[in-house]
Image (cartoon, rainbow, N blue to C red; front, side, top):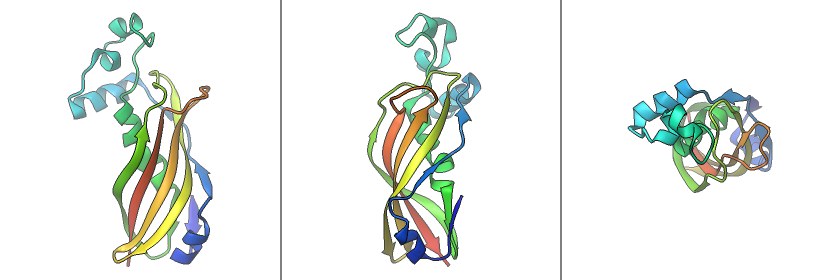
Length: 150
């Protein structure tokens, strides 16, 4: 985790890249996500049927990959005086490659911009969710967070 002593130091880090640890996408995680979102499409939750389908097995929901952004990317740094961080929004989200269940994913993020606003600092990260052993990413997005300073 990167530590910045001030907003100015964070601003000077534009272009800096961080990589998270690998996270296993197992069937239990996919099933729990399906339950939480009421998205029970067979390509995600029916291993027998999915084995005969277009992906040769179950795959994670695209939105599951996206939902991992706060844990994998946004938590990669802290700034002295930061009280909390909240999701501000997303730009340009794409899902270029499915994530087969049993795969490991990680986030590669780059600080794209740092903007001081009335509530604190708005930070845009360029994030790519990588699948171990696969050239194409599972998800690419511009993730925007608001960090409230005390």
